[in-house]
Length: 230
Length: 310
Image 1 (cartoon, rainbow over the protein chains, first blue to last red):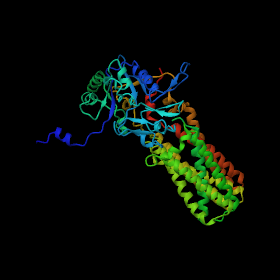
Image 2: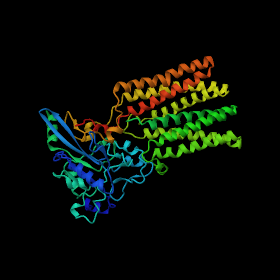
Image 3: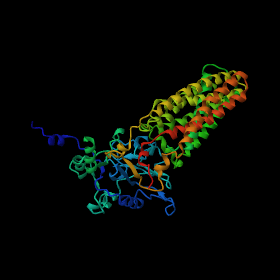
Image 4: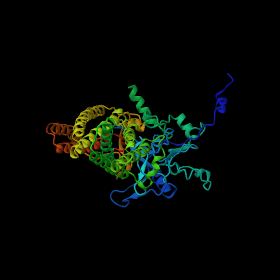
């Protein structure tokens, strides 16, 4: 057969770009550097300000695009602590977008980033209801819905050095647990990681096709396999 | 979900007004001769109640001054469709009220009645589909959501129509409305209980396992990543103890269905209009509890990520 996959791929229409994060659960240490760097960049960038309430009081709360949660799996003494960063997954079929009554929520055709136009948002919160992941947070001061922008005001900035044109969380991660790239480009670091290291999506049951993927922990995989076999 | 009072008030008020308008329109189209005072009073009440509902709904918005933008995405958004249909329905009721008041252009009234019926039906569809289209909120994603919005709205509106009819000298209409109201209250009780039974047996498709993809047994959260809560912990949890939620369920079953049925039976046997008014008021209170429970019972999958503060 002369028609190699490479030729077929070249003849296929140009793939649409889909930027995304790939999060490596093997190396995330739960330091929250991605949380604070996200807040720092975005509160002063085009997505901001991300307002806090009661910031210096007993119960501080506020708007964040990114959270790091912690889970424990297994039975003592064979337990694993898994730190789990969580932000908007930039779904390829985002359920938050069609429900928006004003068109403030949209998915960019050019790179697949899901964004909110803060000048059009009426703060009805329906998009947050329509996101199974709880990725959106309303800004209680500005009264508009906010969410991860994949640092859209940073990744294309020609004034930054090329190696800095990445989301703030990716740059801040001390263990390189966050990979960034076009998952539709098979040669990108993100796509290679998904393909070769079993990258998976969250809540596949709702068919939202999240663009962000997670790399499973090798050690929990091995333990789970041993448990299955025993 | 956290029940928002703005939405509870809007859906119950609009439902009652829609039922009331449907009752007069159907009676009018069926050829019933209704006393002008009754028609004028009823349309006036419907208009005021709809405006109250509209005002209540704007309290749900962070930026009500931009509410006009919500008409733009009607191709994809049920909320957008509702934002278009509601003012159209109010406009038809207002025009009908104006004609009833001035006595002008009576030839238009049958057309307005048909328009009111169609728009009222569309409004019920839009309101219910806002909830029923969210497939991962499994308590809502079912045809019974639509059925209940329609039947409970009709029951409430018919009881209001019966009360207004008996207070303004439309005795024959009031009797018929009370009988139909009784029927729809019983029917609504059956379908609402059916949805309670269905929701009690739901197996939620999302689990902590599918939400995180972490393999292995005995998976549990040890930290949600913040200590003092966030939008995610305020908007999607009702925060009330289980016993209170159960009591509100029992309260709505008694107030929206049992008591109104008894009061309607009393009204139909004695002919006293006070019982009709009381039946409507008690049922309305019951429907507020019903709507509160409708929101509180819905378990959003995002709650899986927000279980433990530390």
